[in-house]
Image 1 (spheres, rainbow, N blue to C red):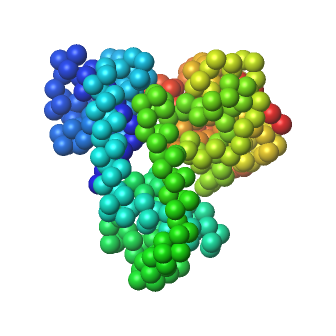
Image 2: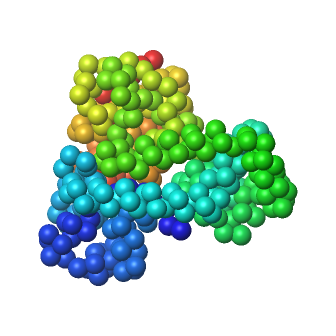
Image 3: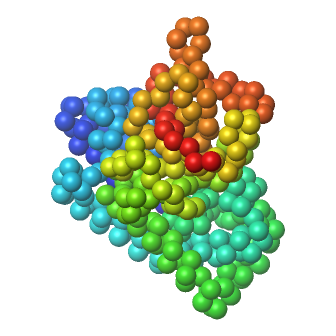
Length: 323
């Protein structure tokens, strides 16, 4: 089963531009089948591919996302039906129970998502979706997960079965359903970086320490809320990020909270959040080289991060800092 990522209007814009599925497939370097699944909204697409799709279709990136206010009603309804159908499939196939069981056991063993994902030779995104009950697991993957958790495959299956019989997984499943529903609704899928808070005076904070000084960002996992600064009033795309890294050296304490506006223009001298992948963030001090091109700097150890012109939309400006 493919992973549902976001409802989109790629097919509509492709047809408006008179471009074929094969042309888009050739542009992205993927199969025709992959394009069909991407357009239906249940094949994974990374940020780089999204940018390339928007460039190919000559439309703003945000216009690719389904919006209840601006999208065609049949597109919204079709997405909802697909979500409901796949949710029922997942429930019948026991994926929710498996995911909840893995999360319960991982927490009992004091293991992080990052630790299990790396030990199981998976990306954080893939393993997270397994725990959310939204992705099937092959026999090989299950064996790798079992090994990462420190249990034999049969022992892991039996443990999950016992947890289910004791009713210990229902609460986790309900929480996962609530998070998944939030992400999968057209209103919430306008952008992966839309704040989930309904309280306009508060802003949601995300992010935990990741690998090599990066920050792992999961926008379904809010860590807390902080007061929304005045410059971010009426900016639904804004969010806050736990610093939790020393890769900026002693410039800021690790307990700092960064207030981020992804729509603001990043320029030389700014502190910015850079997303090399969908769920990995790096905090950079923005510099300019002799050619006038922007790059990012971080320390401990010193590292210069190249930022291509086609990656500028991966930069989100830090507009305020809570120490």
